[in-house]
Image (tube, rainbow, N blue to C red; front, side, top):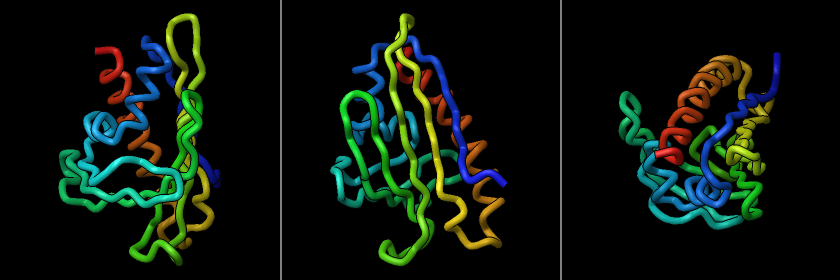
Length: 143
C-alpha cells in the first residue's frame, strides 16, 4: 500500500494567482467548495463546512503548517474530532513557475497513521477527490 497521493497539474496562470487561490480562504473556498470561518494562519486551526454537492454540511478542520510564498502551502487534515489525539494527513501544495504558467503538485501523505479499518477507504476516496479538486483549481485560475 502506498502512503501518499501525488497529483501534478499544469496551470495556465501566473504563480501569484495560483498562490492566492490556495492561501486566501475565500478564494480557496470557491474552488474547493468549502465555507471557511477564517483565514489560514500558520500554527492555527481553520474550520468551516463543505458546500460540495453530496458533502454539504460536512465539517472542515485543518491546521496550517507552512506558508512559504509563493511556492509551498501545507496543512494537516485531522481525521477525528480531537485535534490533539486524532491522526492526521499532511496536505502540501507545491508551486513551480513554468513557461506556460505554474506547475501545481498536490501531495497528501501520512495515511499509515489512520486506523487500519479506514485507511484504504480514505486513501481511495481522497485520491478521487484530489483529481476533482485539481480540475476545480484549474478552472478557477484559468477563468
